[in-house]
Length: 481
Image (tube, rainbow, N blue to C red; front, side, top):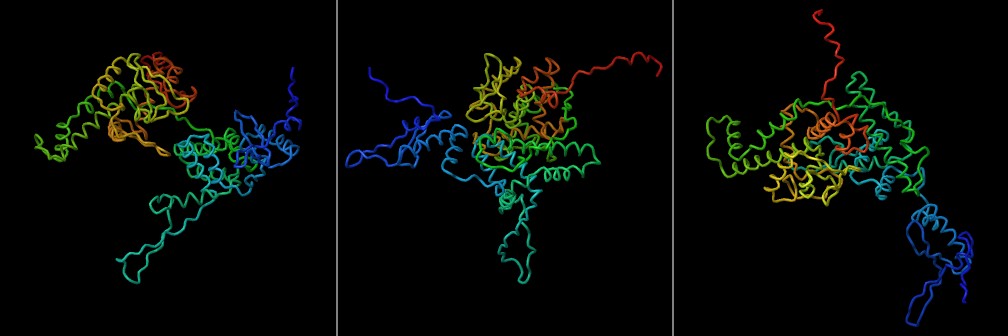
């Protein structure tokens, strides 16, 4: 029986690699040609790659193959190859915030839109530390200026996106050395934000939440799972934000501004769904001081009235989906009819071609029978793939873009008139939904239907106790007071 000529050696043995290095063979005009340099193929981290060892002897190539195998298994393919080829890491003291953020973005470990939010907040801290000096705006020739008169030069503003001020400000802030984001400077920034608000407890609580939000963003950008993906980048010691603790925040629990959700829905039916072109024309005529029946409209007035009526009917859909299903504004905006499960009476919040929910936020939302019937009526009148009429869905990139923003903007002032004065009234509908579910089925059911990652978020922010519970001792006073 023929014996296997390949002897089994350990991977740490040079002889193991002597059996595996090879010289690639090519077909030339004069026959087979061997490449002078030895190569090796290594299987690691789910990938098999061939690498040139830049060696012309078997013994030298085997030694290099053994070193490469150890580097790749310990550090991963990208970092292992850089170490093997002798590529210098980014110098510790020269690394800037912008360079680090570019590495994080290239790793892809944080979603682009989420990373943009984090970056904005971290730049707020870096700007305080660096105090970037903005250059002056370039002078523009203006023939209308009188001879001999000169305008006072103005500096570019970080809010000026037209003249490039925002881009310049970002470049200056991104040049902040990463070592400057140390605990001493971050704490100095935090104190500067909080001290002016110490005399006003409400403002102090708001400022504390804002400060914690920025610190959380910094911790997320420098989290361990991120650093593992960009291990080739050498960071200051200690890691920025690693020694900064979050401050204790005041109570941010939801306080309902909706006396009766049922009454709010009925008002929506009366004010929004009943809107017609004729009623909008009459309302426009009355608001301008007109008396009696509105005169015949011009074609432009008729179109405006028709669009206004459509926006109100779509706004009612937003109201129903927020209050009766607890959907977020983005989920409502890009909800597809394919996500509505009519046979099972529910909506499936899931990743689609046009929208991805927040992390771990997929789930099923059961609906009342009447709401399902309402959705069926809407679908019978719809000619679109979306529940809410709007423009074509576009890639949002780094910004939040709503395809049915006109419907949202129609609903917001209407909710304000109904007493919902919060900064995000559509999101308030979601909180009200959570409070109703909590009162009916408990905090765990509310957390499940709100699709929170943990129950603590539901308990801390999203529920209001709709049932008043008292000690019941008032009757003991009788008529003594």
